[in-house]
Each structure stands twice: as C-alpha cells, then as structure tokens.
Image (cartoon, helix red, strand yellow):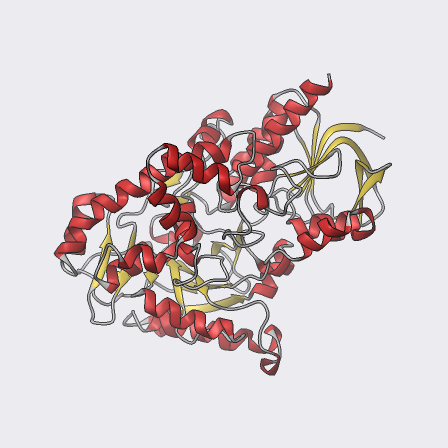
Length: 518
C-alpha cells in the first residue's frame, strides 16, 4: 500500500488549492472525490432535460479568489479566464426604475443619484470605510495564528477605528446602512450579500460582517464579482490541471467512508467500497459535522468537542433554480439595448426582512430575494447557438421546513414557482422564453454536494462561528484536536465563499508542521 504525504477528502476548490500548494512543495498528494466530476460546488453541469445548456450548479460567480493564488498556481496558463459583466448587476425597483451598477464608478454614482443625491455623495465614504475594514482585518485572516475576537478588537483599536469593529463585525447591516443612507433601493443594493447563505435577517447582529466578508480576496477589485469562462467548472479545471502538473494524483468515484485512526492519530482513509489509503496528513474538505461526527465518529471525540461540532448552525437557506431559455428575457426599467448578465431582486432591506420572517417560521418566502445569473449573455459556450441559460440563487428556503408542509420532496415545485414568479415580476416575457426548469432545494444541494444542511458556507459566518470559534473552540484554523487531521473547507477559519484561503492556510500549516517535525 502506497503511503502519501497528504490525502485530501473532497475535491472542492479549497481541496484543489491545498493539494496544488503541497504538490508544489514536493509532497506526494492524493485527492479523493466521491463524484465523477472534480470541483465540489465549483462545477459546470448540464441542466437535466436540456442537452447543451450548462450552468454553474453550485457557486455561480467569482469575487473572492485571492489574486495571489491565481498567480502562485499559474491558473491563467491552465485555462482560467475571468469575465466581468458590464453592468455588474441591475436591481429593478417596484416603481419601474432600475438601479444599475456599472464597472465605471461614475456611471454607478449617476444611477444612484436618481434615487438619492445624498446617497450618491455618501457612497464614497462608505466604500472607503469598507476598504479600511478589509485592510485592518484581512491580513489577520491569512496569518498562521487564528485570531480571537479580542485580538480583532485590539487591532481595530490600535488602528484608531474601533467604530469599524462595532459596526462591521458586531452590528447588523440594517443599522450600518440606515445610519448612512436614505434610499431603500441603495440600501438593498449595498446590503444584498449580507444574508447570503446565512440564517439571519438584515436586523440580525453580525450581518454587516457577512456583507464585508464578500469583499475579501478581491479577485477583480473589491465589490466586483465576475464569471469564469465555461462556468465555475472552468476554475476547477484550471486548479486540477495546475495540481496535476505539479504532481498531485486524483481519484474520482471514491467516497470516503471513514477516517482511520491509530492510537488517536489520523493515519489514512477507508473508502465506502473498502479500499484503504495511508497518509501522514489527512486533509478534509468536507464540512466539520461530516468530518468529525461521520468520518471520525463521536466515540473517538471528546464529548464537549463533539457537542460543539453538533451545535454548529448548518441549515442552509438557499435554493437554485436553473432554466434553459429560448432567448434572453426583457427586463423592465432598462434602457433599450441593455442586456444584463446578472440581475438582483433586492429592492429594500425591508423586503429581505419580510422574507426572513417566513423562514423563521419554517416557511419559504413567496417574495424571495435573489441573484439571477445569465452568464450565457457574455459566455456563449454555455448554451446552444442563439439560446441562453438562467440560474437563480434565491432566499429564504429553509432546510428545515415546518412539519405541516410535508418536506422538500413535496414542496420542490411550489418553491421553484415562487422563484420564477418573482423573476417574472421584473420581466416582460419570462413565460415565453423558458423551455426547461430544474429546481435544487437545500435538501438537493446537500445530496449533490455532500454539504450538511445544504449550507454553502459549511456553517453561518456570524459571531459565535467566526475566528477561533470556527468551526468550534479547540480547532485552531486548519489543525484539529486529532493529530494528523486537518480541515481545509469553508467550515474552518477564515470561512466560506470561493476564496481559497482555507485551502491555502491548510497547506501552509502542514508544511510548517513537517518542518517542525523534521
């Protein structure tokens, strides 16, 4: 039996990044993936029943991947290409107007002025504070030592900006934006990401941090999210090519059944089919609950630690609705000839709060907020000639539905109709252009991507699940209480998004441990 230096469980983007960095350092690396396609939730797949129509079935866009990773792993040489739509997004409003966010800051300012001249003037100072917040915190997130809340607060105090700690980390997005802006449309635009993948509403403390979290990495500059040519699978393909060129080995259709321990030390993995692989370092790209409670098992864990892992908020709130289109729909409130690749339904924070009120009662919103992706508008490779795709990422659709609703198998079609009804409300002709619809509920996402609860971030990124509390006390970043076992997924510090930081940090921790033990 071959002994590997590192065995990765799961080929999500963080696993691919960690594997590539270790292979670059000369380690013998094996990556095991349960599916027949690499990339985890960064994949491009055909819409069922619509041959030739392909969408990003998990993550849909790229705004956080660290430019350093792109350069270190030479991803452009391996086929990675970022496409930036212009406009970046469009936010239709109930009164028939639309707030248009352009690549050009002055054009965006002009669009905001139609809603509030005061808000257009306030935007610059807000963006400067966002940038300052990132400048203070982000280096701490990449550092080897995982900071605690006290360390983070001290850093902001030393920088003379404790106000940013209070408002951006402890505060709600509602309080943050209402103290600076007056237009519901502008606050809807700026607060759009503040509850993505999160069990919270705009008034929930900590949602300002969720918004700021989406600014980290800055693939194309802070606040800009683009598309990868060929869908998010294009990123996974480039990462795989890079890792393979550096010497990493891959095995698909290889579902890990358990992590093998010897005298309390992780020494290998056993697949569901009985095959075993030995490694000096076992690196899990799976979520923390799946890693510890299923693959390791409670009997091998300290009881208090096991309880802390079990207590992670891991219930997803998002649904994906993917459609094949005969042509692109026409959106209300847009200038003639403007064909957006991305449209966001988030007219106000109150609109989002109303949707959250449904989720708190175990019901999905009949007026959901969402991002509508039409990547085929700038990437024709994703659909047959002259045809298009549309993919909705919508909230709130709680994993745990109220018992009287009968579960997601019963409610899937109704949820999909609610999403498309919201899209139809901002278009002139949606029903005329949709030919095929596929709905993926949180339960479906859990099954497809092995994400507990269908939670895209492997756990909320809110106070209590941040910094040295992520995923739980006793786990210091990538390292775990089990010698030889590391975490590299979104559920570990510093958190989710297609960012790469957890995978990069896991590789760095392993290399440092090897040097220490040499």
